[in-house]
Image 1 (cartoon, rainbow, N blue to C red):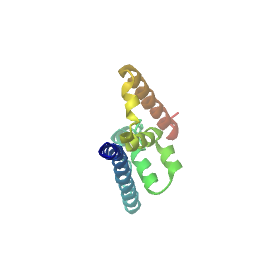
Image 2 (cartoon, helix red, strand yellow; image 1 turned 90 degrees about the vertical axis):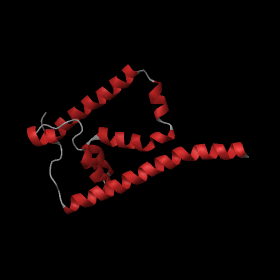
Image 3 (cartoon, rainbow, N blue to C red; image 1 turned 135 degrees about the horizontal axis):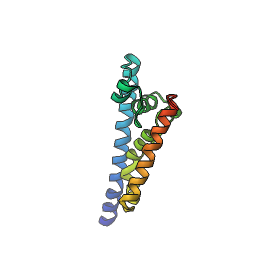
Length: 130
């Protein structure tokens, strides 16, 4: 019986951690959406504010504003990289990162580099630069 309870406790820790992350991210997203509704601060990206060129992470705040407002597709359209990254971060304690750690560093770097370049291209298209 003791082994069973130890197993249940070990299993519930990642689920509790993931649930805590999801709850914290949801609360933050709703708070950011509310704050944005009250006062829109304008462009937050320093690169875009200075050069009018978006970075690969432009739209990251918009992702959370749209999620907090309940607009899932708008959040995904604002920046797919940040959207997917936030979802992966939320569920990482469930063990999904274990496979990622088994890949060679070169493979992980290639995947992340491709995602960042793709996100940069997405932002150029989104803002009409291409």
